[in-house]
Amino acid sequence: MPDAKPKPIETAKMMKRIMADHFREADAASREAGKKLAWCTSVGPAELLHAMGFTVYFPENHAAMLGATRTATDHIPKANAIGYSPDICSYLTADVGAHLAGKTPLQDAYGLTGIPKPHVLVYNTNQCRDVKDWFAFYARKWNVPLVGVESFRGVGDVTKEHVDSIAGQLRAMVPELERIAGRKLDLDRFREVVKESRETSRLWRETLETAAHKPSPLTFFDGTIHMGPAVVLRGLPVANEYYRALLQELRGRIDGKVAAVDGERHRLYWDGMPVWGRLREMAVQFLGLKTCVVASTYCSSWIFDALDPAEPFESMARAYTELFIVRDDQYKERYIRRMCEQFSADGIIWHDAKTCPNNSNNRYGMPERLSQALGRPFVAFNGDLNDLRCYSDEQVKTQFEAFVEQLAGG
Ligand code: SF4
Image (cartoon, rainbow, N blue to C red; front, side):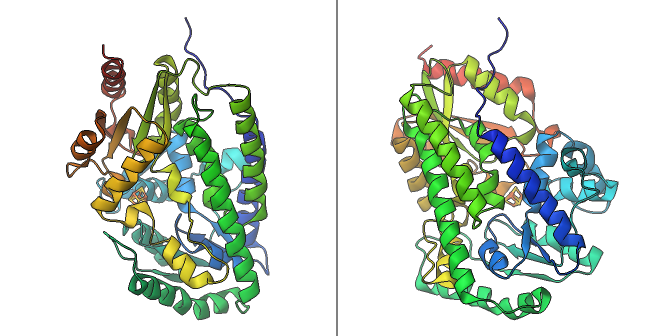
């Protein structure tokens, strides 16, 4: 029998259109007089940049495209050759390597001649230091200003001191951004963008939470595709229109008892990065195993409950410090435990991504501790987000098969 295919989500057609518009706008902003383009890390201060009239481009999204198109592995050695280690973030090395090779998937997908060149690069180290080093490469190369936020890491409770420090850093970057933008920050506009962004976050949360339903109308693999607007367009009305449409489709699936995985028998939680070059293969394997990966730390990382237009700087500071990746292991354990309970997960998959220790939470005994606390099994596999040389198809396939057999009591 041929392999089952993942069920198409109709709203994806709308996403293709709005993502194409996004890349074309970024391209125009990089070249046309009177427009300004800012590059931003995926959990960087996008709301502030939008409020100041920048078009915002997210290199991590581009790096994930390099992974999904399976070109990343070809480009990584070019970055290694100029001194970027094969052990550091393979988003960074794939993106820099592709740039050195003069290649981008934006050429074939949207007809762009290259990645859009920014007027300013804006980072937040809340996720890792790699993003700063990544942007620093382009800052040197193009002689473009680099500004950013140095975040706390390993945070337990988020305190007023944390929030004041980050809000202070956000405020401190405003004069430089105003100089580059050629306009003053309009506080009312800033509040409006934060309000829209909070709505994007709320709708994205609701979208992911549809997967708590049994059977789930959505898989983690769908989520990795449909999170695009929550990452690159949050704060813009078009992202909210998109998630309203997607939610309608998913609610229709729930009402019609349409499962993302026909005959759903097992439900799993995913921690760690996706393997971008193997999304489809994994989705197909889990369909065959009648197992739905229902929720993940990764997709939920673009939910920012704290955003509040009444306090745009402080609430952004809080939202971007409350992130899972910023927190200590006690918080992370409580979080994953809550997620497994909310989504009725029977077990957990831990992806140990070779080049992203920041998003690999299995290295200090957490899977064992959580498995004991929850009474649910886990599987941990070695792989990578982009560098497929660190990933073995056969080994991981066999691990997943054996894990599902274990769940079935086989
Ligand atoms: S969090 Fe990991 S994948 Fe993301 S930019 Fe940092 S090192 Fe790369």
